[in-house]
Structures are given as C-alpha cells and as structure tokens.
Image 1 (cartoon, rainbow, N blue to C red):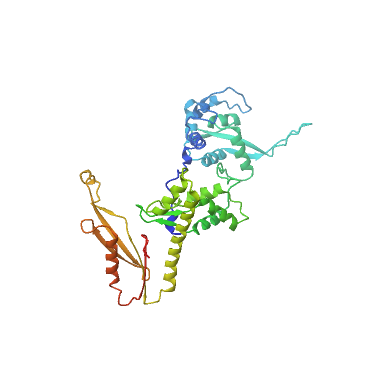
Image 2: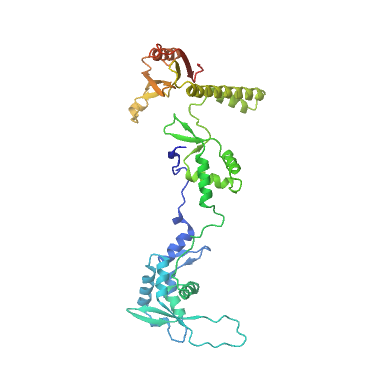
Length: 385
C-alpha cells in the first residue's frame, strides 16, 4: 500500500473538545464567568464570593474585615490564573501545615484523629492575614472538598496535579493492538481509480478484512466496530470498486440479475461468472507472458486502448463553457515487455474514434519492430487478442 493512503480523511467530522459542555463549564469556572451546570442551574462565582454571611469563629475573622474592594481584588487575582493547577498551587501556598499541639480523646469516639493541623491565610493589600477555613472558602469561592484535597496532598509532600479527563479508558486497546490493526490494513492491495479527477484508492470489503484479522490474531478480541473506526480515522481509503470506466458487460448482467421481473436469474449469474473468469484468464496470461518471455528478443506483447476523451478548450468562462467543445482522442499503446507507452493524440476533425483507426495506429507501431519480432500478442479492452 502506498504511503499516500495514510492521510487524515476529510469525510469524517473531527472532534472538538472545546465545545463539550463539561469543558465549557471548566473554562467558565477558571475565568470567573457565569455558566449552567449539568442540571441547568445558573452559577455565578463572583456573586458567591462577595456575599457577607454572619458567622463567628475562634479567631473572629468575619468577612467584614475585608471591604468589597478587597474581596473583589482577591477574587480577580485568583481567577486570572490560567489553569486549575496554578490555582491549586496558589491555594496551597496560603495554607500552613503543622503538627497537632493537643489531643482530647473522648470515650466512645470512633473518629480517626487527624494527623496534621492547618492554618489559612489571605492577602489584604500587601499584608497576610490569618482567617478561618469558612472565610477562606468564601473569599475564593471554592468548596471544602477542593481544599481538603489540597491539604491531603500537602501532608503527602505532593503538589496538586489536575488529572480530570486524562485517565485512559478501561476498554481502550493497547498500542500493540493498534499497530497490528494498522499493519493488517496496510497489507491489502488497493485499486486505483485512474479516470477520476484525483487519484483515489479503494479497498473491496471491510467485513472480510476483519474476519481475516481475527483468523490471523485469534487471541485479540478486536470488534468490528473498533476495526471500522480505526480504518476511518487513520486511512483515506474508500470501500467498493471504482465506478468510473466500468465494464459494460458486467454492469448489464448485474442489472439483469437484480431485476425481479426476469426469471432467468440463474442463467444471467452463470454468464457473469463465465465473463469474469475469461477476464481473469486474460490478465493471468498477460502476467505469465511478461514473466516467462521477458528475456526473449523474438517476442512482443502489447496492450492498447483509448483513454478518456479530452475537451478543448477547458475554461470556466461562461461565454466559452456553454459552447460545443472540440473532442480530442488519446490512443495509448503500452509495450508490456519494455514497460513503455506510445501515445497518439488527434482531434475529431482529423479522424474518428473507430476500430479502423486503432488498426492503423497498431500497424504503424508494429512497423518499428517487424524486422526483429516473430511472435506477437495483442491485448485490448475491446476484445482483441
């Protein structure tokens, strides 16, 4: 398989994680913007941080210590940080960890005694002020679950690291299996549509390819859906066969077989099988002639056919585009022995596209070899041989 088959396909819609609802919510929380949660409820962080609840604590750190301007400055300084990791590291720097000074165990208390004690601080202007945990949570509009995680990491000597959405899925396939699937798809030969506007590669049957993969790797439980998704995401190949310049006999027999009003379906099927076997026999004979008689000087094998018509002039200008254009015929003679081609190009005013013209071109080409060649094989799509 050619290297150009491994192109990113443009027929499949690409994922845009920035438009996912959960990522929009994450970004809104980082940038102090209002957003709606998964239940459709509106959230406004700045309103949450500016509220002034009345509470009492041991160190008397009511939020009335801080003016509205101070609270807004603290809030904006925190939410201008670009990522959650930076925010968590900033919060960790405002928490001091220390040993528990005094324990008062009570009879029947089943709670696990805490190992560390924490003090919380915040900046008021240029000074650092100690506050309680409730005031700390309200100032920075965070939850206790977030600060508890930061304290646990501090007690373990670790820095916060955001791992949300970065863990591998449980049912994901390993890189080894992906490489096996990639090599298996690349092992198949492709057909090229040579008459289309651009070179396009085709594979015949993806279901059959998956069955062959399971026979080759019976221990790998690769489903057909994964095999198909991997094919679509990593290969710019089409399925089926090129529908340009197809065999008229094959198309005629296929249409007659599909016609529900005809009763001779079995006969038409047999005719199609015989027709394909004759074509296969012809191409096998061409390959055999090339391999067996490659070094024989008295042997000549030619393949010839008309190529696609060319319309002149080719222009998008409206005044010329809708006029009747001149048809240019291209007749190609390919020497299978030397792997060279001979082109005859002429327009419809010079000659027509008939069998007589084909004979003229072939005889003219043979005049170049008549002195040295005693055996001649001819192959054509029109049935010559």
